[in-house]
Length: 295
Image (cartoon, rainbow, N blue to C red; front, side, top):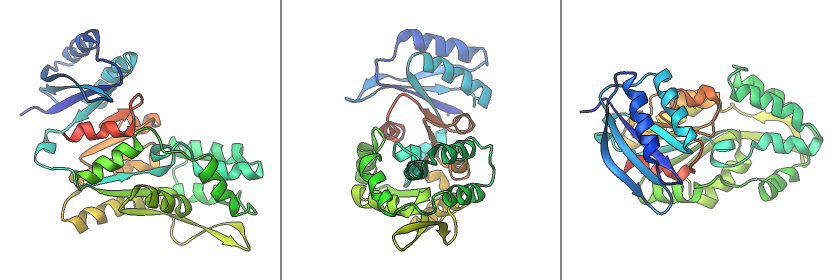
């Protein structure tokens, strides 16, 4: 049995020059790649698989990904345990993962404070601000006085699902996979996405609204990285499976606890701290490419 399976996915045909460079670079780590299948095209993506005779460390994986990036190709590193542990749960972050924006930044734009809020958001996602709860409270406080109507305007005018969202979720549901959206964002948006895509469960934070305006406060417990991981564990427990039976997707440091230990962790256009720990890093393909990892 191989120690690891490598999967390359691209919107363009996978170049033989890339395959040659990939195998040559792997040999420098004493890693031998054996072709599992020739290149396949599924109407959206070209993909190919190789088995590896050893498990590659973070530095080795990043070197191979840098080669793939030059060929506009995303490279994934999968555990052979997936063969005996079918995927039952798909757990996703919302902001900048399932959708194209950070909702809190766009809400802040209505008060002229987008730059200030976005600066805190970026530092938090990079992992420079360790306490997500404190980070969120600081950002939400800057929203005090924003009309509640701004939430609807953000949803209608600025929020768009990221490429492949519709195909990913319809494909997951067709396979009987439980879909869980866990967000450090806000219930106003997760609820609309639940209705739009038929998500099985959503968890997020609730903004306090009084007299039609945001108060700058969050109601109840804040959904942070630990809470995201706990909601995934609960979903797996309810379904009678373990975390290895899940796919997780995120882009920021507060997704790492949820992603760690899952069957397949996917970093979508993510911060470097997330990419280096994830099994798959999607920078060129859409979210629906995840379905190719569980064929």
